[in-house]
Length: 78
Image 1 (cartoon, rainbow, N blue to C red):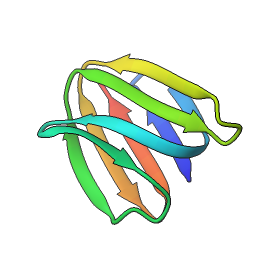
Image 2: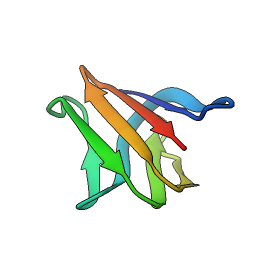
Image 3: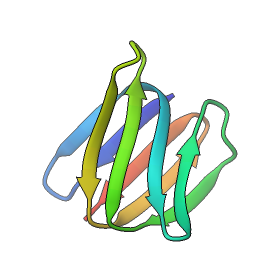
């Protein structure tokens, strides 16, 4: 899967990942390969992901929107 995390100023992360956990408005949720397409509002919390080599990464976000479609997770944070 490809994860793209962008802000108005710059690209925060772009790369291949095994899983992504996002702070959704109704609670955290995890996206794995071949996840159903969806769009979700994100709230303040931790965006966590595991890179293809198994390394866990995490970043704090204040809010945003996530678009999941065809194994591409696009996250716009603000």
